[in-house]
Structure formats: structure tokens, C-alpha cells
Length: 158
Image 1 (cartoon, helix red, strand yellow):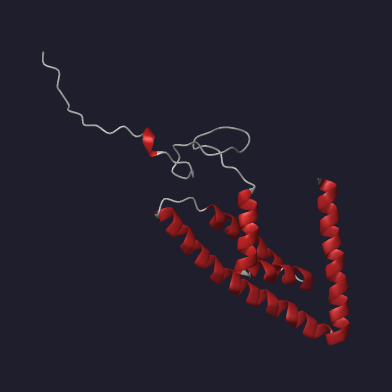
Image 2 (image 1 turned 135 degrees about the vertical axis):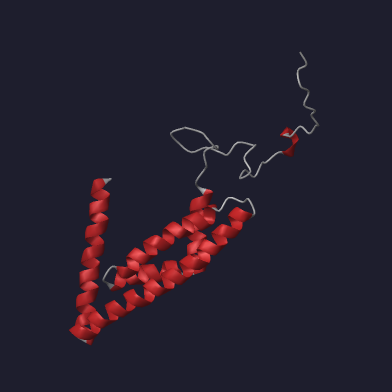
């Protein structure tokens, strides 16, 4: 795992340096630096506005009693997007701008959500599993488990 992370970070860094040198050679040093700063500022503003929209969607889903799984995953992706956009370089900015597109981010979130299974409420299991049938977040929520009735409180007479 460490070797893979090392390889990814090293490759991205080398690619960033290569692209920055090429763009700097074409535009010049100061315009390249200015472009990197502008993309970071614009990207930060866009992440903030989309994050606020996502927070509103999250609150609406919770108010309806629905599991906001996609919104949670998209929120994590927006955090990653913010990091990508603030990181100096054009490759990370390009990846961040791709993740800023709601359609792309939504498709990736749906893909991730389809491959994740949630643990039952209160479960202390080590892995993930399907929600139990009594969970309000379960797609198999069964109303048949509810027993309706009336009760009367009777005091003990001594």
C-alpha cells in the first residue's frame, strides 16, 4: 500500500513539474504563477458555493428521513476537490475542475455508493453489511413489524 501511494504521489509531482516547466516556457514565469494563483482562488470560490448547495441538499434529505449517502460521498469529494484546486499545478487543477462538475461528481458518487454496504444501526461489526429491515434507511423497510394497539394504565390497589 505504501509503495502504491509513494508511486502515485511521486508520479503526480513529476507530472506537475513537467507541465509547469512547459507552460512557464510558453507563457513566462510570472504569468504562470499568476495563472496558478487565479485557478486556486476561483476553484476555492466554486468549491465553497457547491459545498453550500450540497449542504442544503443534505439537510433536505435528512428532514425527509432519507439516508443522504450520495450527498455525504459528494461532500467528501468536494473536500478532495478543494485540496486539488489549492495544490499548485495544472494537472491537479484540471482534476479538481473535473470533480467540480456535478454530473461527473454525481456519477462517481453513485458508483461508490453502489459498492458500499451499510452496517445496521447500532451494529459493532468490523465490516459493512446490508441495513436491517427495521432501519428507516433500508430500502426493504417493512411496515408489518409494527403492532398497533391501545393500552390503559392501571394502578395497583392495595
